[in-house]
Structures are given as structure tokens and as C-alpha cells.
Image (tube, rainbow, N blue to C red; front, side, top):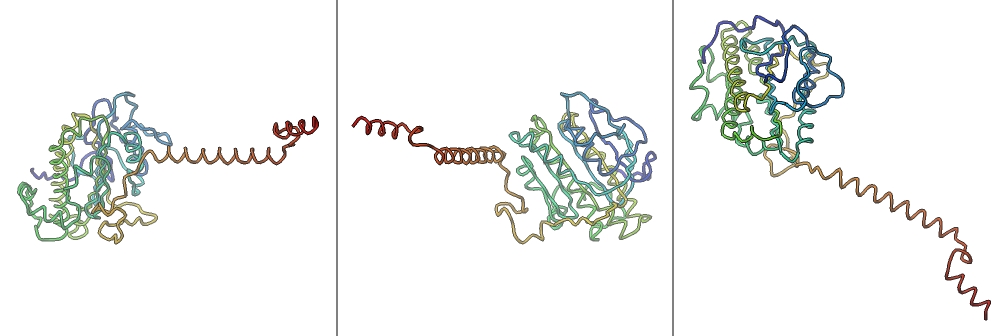
Length: 347
């Protein structure tokens, strides 16, 4: 990797959404159409062929073929910088109203529609030690370092990015520098694990990746945005993200959408506090070291409806039968009393 002197893109200024990679049938139109941060999940859902509750009135994305959709969507959120030099991107758009958002709704849709195929769903924020895995991701990324301690230990092992990155002014001992390098290491390890499990990119279920990087934000807070450390890290991250997007795009057979959202500061009207997996004392699933929930059984809804309506039908049957028995005339409605009464008359 080489460090370029230009750290900010010449196109969109301010917070931006950059489409790093996209297949031809997912048509992004070039222009300066702003998109709201809260609409990013809807945009991701539409690129994957899913429906959304409200129509996305944004001209940047055109409707594509109904039966041809990408195999994966990769969204990387970079905090602490408003734009990166990504010259080989497909398109870039201004980002307005940069509020915090998640792809939880998209992940739920993927898991609901493709439950039997167990797609890969990975949501990761290394700086907050926040991890969410679903489907085949539990098996593929079980060795992925999650906590900062694990990631920093990974930096000292073979195959570390420290051997190939031009650190320049960055230090291997400073906390802020290590956080940034740890996030770069996670990107490298995700690509390496997917290359080891190439069969995941060939199944019929779409995969979803959501990564949040805040190493640049820490560097800017520690050294200032005019410092050489911040400038070097910005250039390194731009090159790493460019290669990361190209590698994933190639692994999925040129059928993946890779987006990069750069945000200087999130507008948080109500503070959203992330829960660290290390702070949890009570683990809901003892078999999982990451405090993941138990696997959801999609037959639950079917069983629930069967039991519910069966109970309702039985209750109505008991009420009807009881009502008729209470208002029954033994002399006319019961064949037993009728035959007995007739026999008495004959005697």
C-alpha cells in the first residue's frame, strides 16, 4: 500500500455516501443528490431487492431487474472524517442529517426470507467491541478477534498488517494508533476468512456486512486533524478500503454492493449508548462467549397459531354445547326420554 498525499476526495465535500463497488444491474446515477442518514437502511434494502415501508424518493438509485440481485451488501461506516480519497468509486453523494443508524431491519429481513439457507449476517464495531452474527457467520467468523485485547494480540502474530503497512508517523505503542491499526486488521481478517470459505459467495442467499470504524475519530481527538498521524491514517484507510471493496467484489463474482459512509460527527438528539459484550454479567446463551441470543425457531409462529386457534375453537364448542344442553327439553330433544315416555304410556 502506498500513501497518497491527497486525503480528501475532490467530489463531494462534507459527510458523504460513496458507492465503492456495484454490479451493472444495480444502477447508481452520478450526481449531487443528498441522502439522509436515516434512509441508508432503506437504500441498502432496495439494492438487495427487498421492499421498504416508505418509498425512497431519491434519484441516486434506479430500479433494477426484478430477478437479478446482488449476492452481498457491505456497508462500512467511517467516523471522524467527512470524505476519503476513493478515486475508483462508482458514485458519491452528500450525506445530510447524519444520525446514527443500523441495518437491523435489513438483517431481520434477510434472516426471515432465507432462514433455511442460513445467510451470512455480520455487524461489527471493533472500537465498541460490539458484535452481531447470524447464520453461517457464527461458524465462519468464530475465530475473528472481537475485543480490543484480542485484536491487539492479533497484530503481533504472523500475517499482521503491520508488516505491510507504511506506518510513517503512526506508533505501535500509542493507544489511539493501535485502535486504528486494529480496525485495519479486522478488515484484513474478514477478507482472509472469506477467501478461505469461498463457498459462501456461491449460495443463493444474500449476505450482509455492516462495519463501523472509529479509529480516525480517536486519532483526530488525540493528535488533531492537521497532524501527520491523522493525515497518514486517512490515506492508509482510503487505500485499505479500496482494496477491501475490490476483494469482496471479486469474491462474490462481481455481484456485491460495497458502500462507504464517512461521517465527521453523528447528530445524536438522544444519546445511543452501545452495550459492550464485555460488560454483560448475565449471559443469555451460556454456549456462546459473545452473549448472543438463542437461535430463533421459525416454526414458533406456526405452532403459536395452531395452539391459539385450537383453543379458541374448543372454547367456542364448549360454550355452544353447554348452552344447548341448558336449554334442551328432555321430552322433545332427547331420544332417550322420548322412548321412555312412550313406553310408560303403553304400560
